[in-house]
Image (cartoon, rainbow, N blue to C red; front, side, top):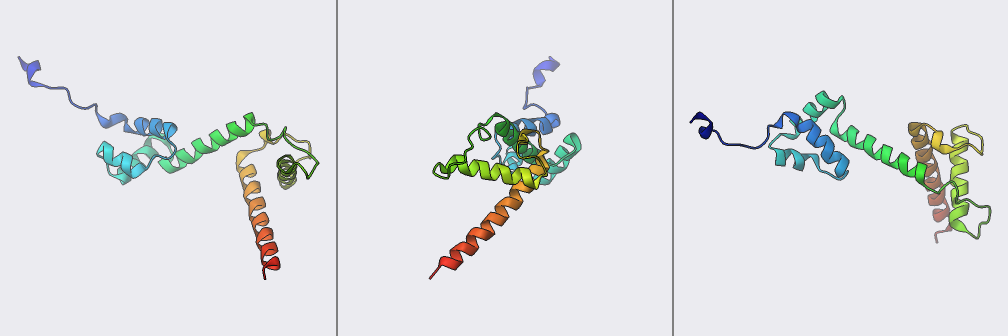
Amino acid sequence: MLADAFTAGPPPLADWPDLLATALRARSDLRLAEWASRMGLAPETVSRGFRLAYGTTPARYRAELRARRAFAALRESKLSQSQGDDPGVPHAYANKRVLADLRARLGLSQDADLRGAPVPALRRAAEAALREDTRRRTAETRAHAP
């Protein structure tokens, strides 16, 4: 019979962009070249095909997933609740200073809830604060070096 001549093979790769998106959601450390190799695809094909299907590159998709997860973690965290004025409690005191600095950089009032701030602006403000803090600490270290 004709049906006996056909054997089932692996599923077609027509939906591999969806498979990659699922894999990226499951593992943020997924190496695209390794995934492409396992699927029998060239890394360039993966990048182009994913962009056609999702409108963005796999790397950008992964970055957006990470940003969403970080934002969700921030929303659920108690960082904004663990603040204090006592320098003897370093973690709470540092939280208060960092959050106050971010609010100032974003032009927000000191009692504004950062969870409503736009993520890109919050990221830029945090990066700028980190750069300035690194420069300040480096200068202090050099000043106290023998």
